[in-house]
Amino acid sequence: MVITTNSNQNIFKINSDGKIVTSIGKLKKYGEDIINNKAAKNKTAWKPVSVALDKHGYIYVVDRVNNAIIKFTAEGKLVSQVDMEKYNIRASKIRIDLNNNCYIWEDLYDSKRLLSVNINELF
Image (cartoon, rainbow, N blue to C red; front, side, top):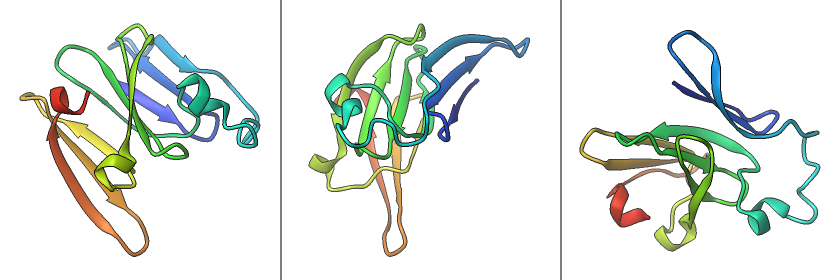
C-alpha cells in the first residue's frame, strides 16, 4: 500500500505488516520551498496529493503545485517527471489498472475531466 501525507509532503510505502518500507520526501514546514520552487528544480514531490502503483511496483505521484506526475522506483528513487500542462489538465488524482492504463482526474471548482492514457505512453 502507498499513502501520501500532503500536509508534510511525504509518500510512504507500507508492507502487509503495517511497517514503512519506503519513504519519499521529508518532513518540512508547510510552504518552505514555495518561494524558490525547489521542488520543480530538484524534481521531488512538493505537494503530493495522490499516489498509485503499477503492476511492476513503480510509484506514481501527483504533485499538485508543479502540476506534474512523478515516477519513482519501488525503493523511492526518482525515475522521471511529466509536466501535465502538455496534456492541458490540472492533475488531482491518479489510478493505474492492471493493463497499465493510467487515469488522471482533474477535479477543480469549474472543471472535472478525466485523461486516460497508457502509462508507457506517458513516460
